[in-house]
Length: 215
Image 1: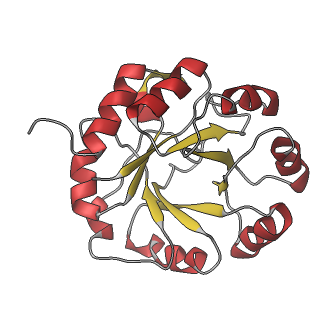
Image 2: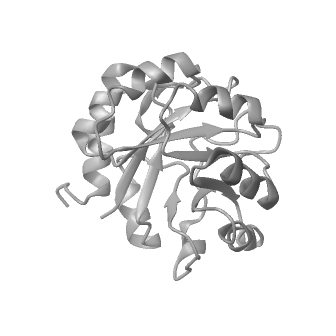
């Protein structure tokens, strides 16, 4: 069984659905190109609906300090998620400047990508192991793509980690079984269209990740 992060929330009903289903993390996207993007003001309203004990994660893609400060002035984030091409030095810098834990997303398509997880594990507080986006893709994540989960079998890193990339209510239990992921992160896998979350899919995903489904 694995804990769950529901990312890309933009509607109050789906924040409620994530919390009621038992998600341990909720994510807000601060990347204008994403169909799941929210403003600092919108996220501020949504954050008030998040129960105590559920961690609030802000997803940023190569953010400058001004954007981070603007969001943090209005949204009580618990974790900053860096989902772009940020270097290990930038990860360290963001941690020091913002005073919050930083989770770094690392895209995986083959074994040649795995060493980056070790490199970022030296500086980040958490790792997000995601599918590498296709070349030329507008979005660094949320593309509904998976990678070969067998690449992760038996591997360990210095930091806590989450698994993302192409996860759905139908395949998440198998992904957890293969990889041993302690946390799974989903966005497009609980949507009926890009950016349109479905409460029923959120509930089904959390249940499947926890092993609460009939075999």
